Amino acid sequence: MIESPVERLLKTNPDMEVWWDSSPLVYEQWTQKMLDAASPERRPVLEEQLRRLFVVEDPARSVFRGCTTNPPLSLKAVQADPEFWSRWVDDFIRAHPDLDQKAVFWATYKEVVKRGAEMFLPMFEASNGRYGWISGQLDPRLFTEKEIMIQQAEELSALQPNVMIKVPASQEGIEVLEVLTSRGISTNVTTCFTLPQILAASQAVERGVAQAQEKGVDLTRWRSVITMMIGRLTERKALVEQARRRGIELTWQDKHWFGIAVFRRAYRILQDRGAVSKLLACSLRHGPVVAGKPRFWDIEKLAGGEIVFTFPPYVLEPLFAIGDGLHFRPQIEEEVPEEVMDKLMRIPYAIQAYDPNGMALEQFNTHPATLYTIEQFSKAANGLEAFVAERIALVREAVPTG
Image (tube, rainbow, N blue to C red; front, side, top):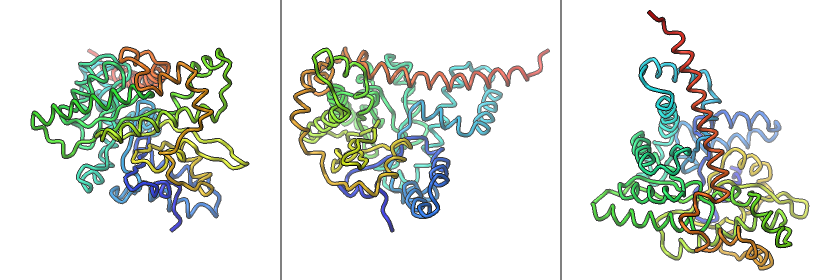
């Protein structure tokens, strides 16, 4: 057996996990796309490796240990099979003629999450709830609405026992996180980019766990992960603009070291505190080219951690393309180059993200990465709602009147 780069990465820590970052409903389609693009001599090995990542007929044997989704990925799942989803939505509209557009949108979104969760449920049962979680995100357009987020979380968690709720690291989301944890609802903190957000989320979970234990809530099948969206932090204009105003030119490498530095510091603090939440790395970007060879620093530099990586197609494709040239070793405990940190610690945007006290809770909602990501996620939610609106119009126009 020739190991895939994912399998080699996992050998750097027995408690590391890699999750699929997309709807499970599109995994087969993506696999076929990869195989179609592969050379004839490469295809047999690649197929074996991809089939091991997610074993559809026996999920418990998969290399992947869970799944994350978000509104853009859920929209892609619907767009990947428009015939099925058009039929499903049309049938739902006919069965519920009194529901408005938003209600039909939410029902459709829940169905996408539910079907994905069903695919990972055998892994969840086989591991007694340790693995096989799938994340269902709250409506990103409502990231400041505490009560609605709690209600949506209750609905999503009721779909399947392995649905983990993606809660935004907004000011209100931190409060929601504590409430959900106190009720024994598993969570994945999202739209999270900075050390202050990670620490606030971790502390909210700890408070929620204490409340759950006081109330006798069963936490045996409960998990908490906190996602740091690395690329979404490092790619914002504010970083470059603030650096230039101070006469600092940041290289590609400097910016990637920035994301790695924040993640490493968060990891060390959570480890030192014995936090119950596991840190998750997402929004990874491949590169740079070193000595003529492509690298994947966002993965390599975090190897060896007791963490979760979540890999979407845009990460897996370059990872498999350059995988044979990557030799993973534990690096997460290493120090970031001093000359890089000297640059970064002169930039307010970087200080906010790296310093445990860099931001107050009240600043979470207006961080540039938060605003950018919420806008992207909201557009995707609007896109799915527009799809639903089109189906409603077609179905109701076809209903005879009089």
